[in-house]
Amino acid sequence: MNQTTTTAPASAAYEPRAYRQLIAGQWVEAEAGRTFDDFNPYSSELFARIPAASAADTQRAIDAADEAFPAWAAMGARARQAIFLAAATVLERRADEVVLLLALETGCAAPFARFQIQWAAGLLRQAAGYPYLPGGEIVASDTPGVFAMAVRRPLGVVAGISPWNGSLALGFRTVVAPLAAGNTVVLKPSEDAPVCAGLLMGEVFHEAGLPPGVLNVVTHAPGEVGPVADRLFDSPKVRAYNFTGSSATGAQLAARAGAKLKRIALELGGYNPMLVLADADLAYAVDTAVFAAFFHQGQICMNTRKILVHRSLYAAFLDRFVERTSPLRAGDPADPATRLGPLINDRALARVQQGIDDAVARGARRLTGNAPRGRCVDPTVLVDVPPDAPIHCEELFGPVVLVEPFDDEQEALARANATPYGLSASVMTTDVWHGVQLGAQVQAGMVNVNGPTMGGEPQIPFGGVKDSGWARFGRWAIDMFSDLNLVTVSQAKRQYPL
Image (cartoon, rainbow, N blue to C red):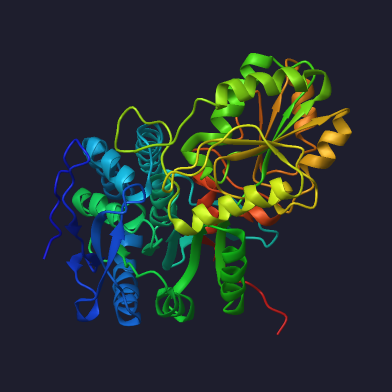
């Protein structure tokens, strides 16, 4: 039975919908018809009713992916390309509906929702060319008459685990590279965004004509990930994993994958510094910092967490930054005028509030921000945060940023690198070449000179170092989700010593 697609209304008057899982090309209920409720983070109203998968559902999805793998891996490049292009068209046609879904399920305001749609459509169109990329290379052989080829081949079944925060963009990123490399996928989205981080990917690809079983989506209730994860990590049919999420969870999953000698791509958390040098354009640095620190309520792995400002600019920067930040208010993300929405759930709210309160109790000063309204937390600027406060070097994942002065650039580098994370960084300066040289000393997978810590395009080698993960996305992900096999051809009979 096909899953019906209901066009969402253009207002917050949205009727909750019952979803089904995608397994073997069919939209099916979970075992025994079990479901769970998915709530709107802003209003706490029911958004959708979602299947609560079991280990048996997960195994069915794995088996379906395994059965679909040979035909998908053998499919010609032109046929695969057509599916990715069709998926991009489907997504763009549903853009207005998707904007509302993102608002109601994840608290995503329209600017970030539109960005995610544009980014995901670009990813799909670029992935349409991946099947035409070189599938290996000719290798010189020292043996006379031997022709050697290093050939890339897909792995088989890949398990994808997608997050709730950039749910649409990261949901597609979780599945597109493995699919483009010729693998089949079982996708398990976060229980906080089962629609926008999972089932929506299934709907788009299903409509685009992806063959049955190539992409399967299973959803689990909060607190019930264990049986689903156990089946994904214990099944010999699953050959690799693609995970985006917290560093703590990533470390656990890497250990599980390593115990089975399976590979795993990890894109994890970040504590992303912005360095404002003495010669920076002050107004532009402030504008960049406001965007980078608070976009999507600080719930993006690349949000700026700490701004390090040269002491000669510190007072002026702080005055302007506070002036720009103070009027910003979080509100209803379904309202097109809203720029900042709520935090995803009560756990996130408690973590952010505890981090702020702890820092203030230790002597920090809070220059902006108000008491939470529901799950809405207004942008918060903290100064004089002592080094013993956890927020000084740990990711809080909310609309909170620290601002600190520095006297020389080596001091700034030491502070920027004094964190276990290494995802992205920013250097603001009018001397671009000096910014490049200084940025090379920041321990981060991505450094932006005169740009925000946050951003990215589908084709870039996205990824971090240290506790922010390993592997790179974009076309570089093809290497992660394929094997390099050697094939030799002997043009004449060889002579052997035995």
